[in-house]
Every structure is written in structure tokens, then in C-alpha cells.
Image 1 (cartoon, rainbow over the protein chains, first blue to last red):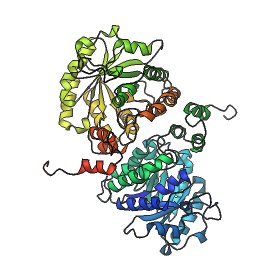
Image 2: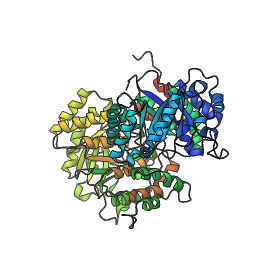
Image 3: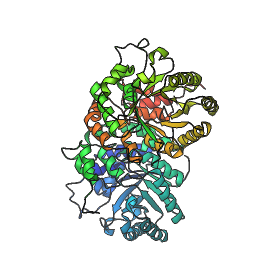
Length: 317
Length: 317
């Protein structure tokens, strides 16, 4: 698919950090930035921006906070690199934490929110835009929302200045028909805005669902190297590179990055096709139960996990 | 999706045997048969039937030959089990090797062929039918055929008595649009016949492509436990169980089988998402180069593999 409007955002460090509390070495982050830039990827999301007042900085790596000095150090000397992005959660960043874009290494700051926070998200995104940044709103977990709620959020978004809105399959629960339903709905409700897609690979559908979103009109695509991300991870950037036809995209630097950095990391921390996450995806549930299960002694007792999540609770009709 | 015509065929032992020369223990095969039967799967393909005159029997496990006595031993005492299937290749089985179906543990014998052998395949399938078996023809590697060749083969198949024909993505090269194109073509050209789908997971599209085939009219679905199969393997049976809505299909027995038998096996032999197979899939090539690469000392040098397969040969325009 070659559509000049299509842009790719690598979220390896930001989403992968959910596995290791963002404790990536500077070398690892720099190698990722170098390869992603050489591959023609448009944006790299290097972590979350958060106030150190809200988190115990001894428990997290530096990409949980994305302080400008740390970011500048890992990109120093890499010319014509991908634009940098970071993500913020509602209520976890304060206006004073954000300098004007002209003084920042970041081009884009993305806002993640649940649908009930949409108006707070719009206010935050507009504050970000006023500081000169590009922005998007990523509405999480819409597979658990009623259509009425989604339509209401889209009405609010359509009246805002926010230029880009993501369909996010937080739980890896969607089929391509669901992706089509949502992307077409977002496209219709948000004329003039860019629609993005962010998928999870619980059921090995992340790449297929990303392709479907492209067909249906999404032009901002999230992916991560070798699929790194919590649990099953995301759409694999290398797969997306094989699909997109724009000659600016290159597979080879990503292959090199995988063999030199991501294969060794995969020996230390796990992500990919893992049955408990397949089960939470199938049930359209947050992966938190699967995360806890994989940290326990019964990590490979898939039947017990399945029974735990599917046995009806009689009092809960 | 609940369509009563849909039938599922488990090909774990037959396709998985391509990794380990069919050297599965009787216990492993019996556990697979038990679980697959309990899950409501319609057919289990337990191996290839081949003449021992043509293969060195010391180099292969018994599921390369599927002698009736060996088969009877592993299914003994399992009531209401899945129907048994085996596969034959053109020229590798002789009429004298096949007893009448009423004297055989097999209900179905499937014929795999390349498109140029279609008339030999039809003759073999009709011989199989005359012995009382169900049969299918699985036309391999159609992603490498011209549409003219496919149409010609479909014309021959339409005139035959063969009741079922498979769309086979041998190289894991198809997108869902390709699946739609082929399944719709087969459906239109073969009125009254069942269309099957057999996918490979080189690019993490096996499950998505199987779903697409169902939507387009395929009613005979191949899958394997935990995706076992050469290289990237096949559509995961457990994923298919989560998609199909017919209450006869059960996920739980497959989960138990995975944790007790397939996870330990996966520690000994490899299959799944492996970059060199992703590259052969993207290039629409037979996986033989990837197999050799993974057997070599440079197994994780993905860049060199990519360069080897993509560097143009100037004399070969």
C-alpha cells in the first residue's frame, strides 16, 4: 500500500517499557532510534512524560519520565532522525512539566485516555498544541464501550482542535470487522482529522488489523520492533515495513536492530504469543490477570487460568 | 461464526512432522488425538501415508508411513474420536498400499499436489474415493501461479468427482485480499464442492486469513495445536476455537494439551514467528532457504539472509 499520507510511529520503547519499567539502557534506545530513523519511520515514541513528583523515580527507568536532557543524550549526533514523540496520561503530567516545543526535543506529545475522560484529554491536548507540539488523542479500550459512548466522544472530538485520533485495541480483542466498524465511524465523524490505529497481538491479529485499518482509511500507524510491548505486544514494525510500498520505508535496518538488540533482550524479558494473554484478548479483558499469572508459579497452567476467568460467578448476574 | 457446514481438521502431527521427521512418541500422538476429539474437531490428520519402498524407514518416524496397525494402537479405546485423515503426495503412494476404507482406520485421505500435477491428483483422488474414503485435493503454492493456470486447474477439478478442494497458502505469502480473491474464485468455479483453507503463519496472518476464508465461504478449515508446523507453522487451533461459535467446539482440552505436551516439545524443536521465514513469506518463496539458514551457524544473522535473498542476480533478468 502506497498512500503518501501514511505515517508510521514506532512505540517500542514506550510500550516495551511496560514490561521492564522503562529500564532500557541508553545504548539500546539509541540503537533503536538510529535504526528506526534509517528505516524511514516518521515518529519514534521514546517513553512517557510524567512528573517525578508522582512516581518513585528509583522504581522506574528514565523513559518513564523522558526528561529532555536524557532524550537529547541518546539522539545526539543522529541527523535526519525520526521525529520524537512521548505519551502522557491524564493527570500525570502538569503544565509546568512541558516547555515550549521550540525548546524541546519532542515534536509530538500524545494523550492516552479512557472514553470517560475525553473532555479532560481534549483540554490537555489543546494545552499541548498551544505549546507548539503536534498531538493525538488515543482513546483506549473502546472494545469495552457502548456505541452511544463512542459516538458522544467522537462528537466532542469533532468540535476540538485535536488533529488526530486513534482507534486503540487495548485488549487485543478486535477482529478486522471491528476495526472496519470503528475506523469508518471515526473517519465519518471526524472530517479533516487523521485517524490512527494501535493494535495488540493477543490473538495474532495485530498486523492483520493494522492492514485492515489502512484499507479503511487510517493514516497514522503504530508498530514496535519485533512486536515488543506488554504481554503479546504490538503490530511488528518489520511486518509493516514489508507491507507498505512507499520507497522511503526500509526493512533492513530493522532486521539488523532485531538481531543485535531485540533477540538478546527477548532472552531476558518475555513478550509475544503467550496463551494467558490470548485468553484475556478472547474475553475482551484488561491483561492484568495474565500479567499476574505469568509472574506466579502456575504461569504455564493455562487450563486453571482459563477456568479462573470463565467460571461464572453466580451472584454477579 | 456459527455455520453448521464448517468442519475443522487438525494437522498437528502431519504438518508438525515436517520439523522432526514425524518422530512423535505414541503418547504424544494419542494425547493429541484425545484432546482434539474432546475439543469437537472433526478430523485429525495423523501423518502421511507413503510406501516404505520409497523412503528409508530408519530416517523417519512412523507417522511418515501411517501403517494401519500403528494408527490403531494410538487411538485404541478412545470413543467418539475425530475422524482420521492422512495425506498422500502424487507418486509416493501406490494403489496396493491402500486397503478398502471399511478395513482402514482412516475416513479421509487427502491429496497434495502442485498445479501442474492436477490431473494426476484427480486420478489419485478418484481412486481413493473408489476405495470408499472421503478425499480432498490441496493445490499447493497457488500464490506462485498465473491466474490462467489456476483457472485451467479449476476447470479440470469442476469436471471431477472430487468433493473438496483447498486454497493453500504454502509460502505464507498471502494477504486477506488474496485469500478473498482465491476463495471466491474457487467457490464460483466449483459449484457443489466444499472449499478448504490451509494457511501458514510466516507473517502472523494465518489466523486472520483463515477467518477471511470463512467469511468468503470456506467450510473446511485446517489448523494445528499451538500452530505447530514447519517454520512459522499453521493457523493455531486454539485461536480458531475462540472464533468458531458452534457449541460443539471446546477450547479447554486444547489448552490442556498445549501446557502438558506442546510447551515441552517447543523447548526441543522450533516453530513460530521466526524472521527468516517471515522473509521467505514476504518474498513468496519456498521456505527451504530459511530451513537451511536456521540449521546453520549464522541462524540469527537476519540481515545476511535478507541480503542473500534480495540481491539481484544480474544475469537473471
